[in-house]
Image (tube, rainbow, N blue to C red):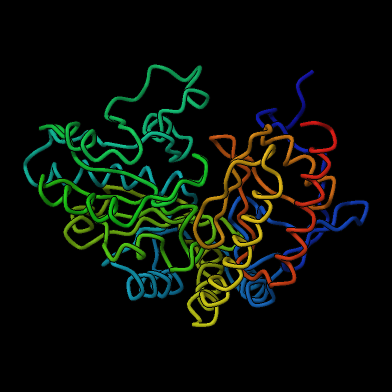
Amino acid sequence: MIPAVMPTYARYNLTFDHGEGANLWDTENRRYLDFAAGIAVAGLGHCHPHLVEAIRKQAGKLMHTSNLYHIPGQTLLAERLVANTFADAVFFNNSGGEAVEMGIKMMRRYHWSKGDPARYRVITVQGAFHGRSLACIAAGKQEKLMTGFGPEVDGFDQVAFDNLNELKAAIGPETAGILVEPVQGEGGIRSMSVDYLKSLRAIADEFGILLMFDEVQCGVGRTGKFYAHEWAGITPDIMASAKGLGGGFPIGATLATERVAETMTAGSHGTTYGGNPLAVAAGNAVLDVVLAPEFLENVAKVSVEFMDGLKKLVAAYPDQLEDCRGKGLMVGLKCKVTNGDLVNKAIDHGLLSVPAGDNVVRFVPPMVVTSADVAEALEKLDAALNDLKNEGA
């Protein structure tokens, strides 16, 4: 008999009861160091007092009204995002997939508004993960996500990672834009170089198409900048944000420049829940913390300590590990052993991580982690690797 909860997840045999900071306790009161953060969501850690109080206060006042009416907290959050990014306007939705999907719609709408509706195709790169809607899985083109959901939604062309010649060759009269993650998460923590991102901006301008960044996972401070593309000193036309934006409360956002956003007129898009009073209260509380100067300074400091420690582990376990990669607190270990085996061994030692593509173990801890948390994580990881070494893995 099928369980009441649809069996779409291969869950670990873990049930958590409560958390604080970078720590989680299971129902048997065993503590785990959480370097998964709900897959890069709990950027402020668990039960951050400022976030908890903001949600509690708003929940006791008003949770939902719909977008038929003005929502002051939504206006405030949009203005803060505009003030601190490239964007001129923001649309709030509920998830990263929705944020990406809207961005794709905006690409088409922009060219339609310019009298060129034939431009509807979007170029993506190998290893991409853009969400799980029919359009998003077609954009990512990962076979494991597309199996059984055919026919594939038309409109997406994929090129090799880090291959500008192939990308330029793929641009045709039907191309509307380019969609990439500055740092791929599911694809194996693969960072796009500064030169590559700068070239994407130049190519988009040269061919009169739009550049969109999917920063659902790598944004909101995760790499040490508010958004990861800032490292390249360039700006997109559209950007999708989610995950860390709500610190655990579901919220997504699609940000855009004026020339693109102005094409989204009344009735062209909408959402029932997106940007409701409770969601934007969470978003504003997150920005209160992330936009404080010392926050990103801490991300930069502890990320260097973590990466240095991982490099030492790669050197100490040459039969189990190949290399480490990533930016800020979005880090991956490329394994020679099966990545799932290392994830499971780390769980045995009380450390949570996330498997990713390219046989990588992904670490996306709360961005409030301390040097002590990093040192403890490295100790637990060392113990897990030692277990695998002794088992001959």
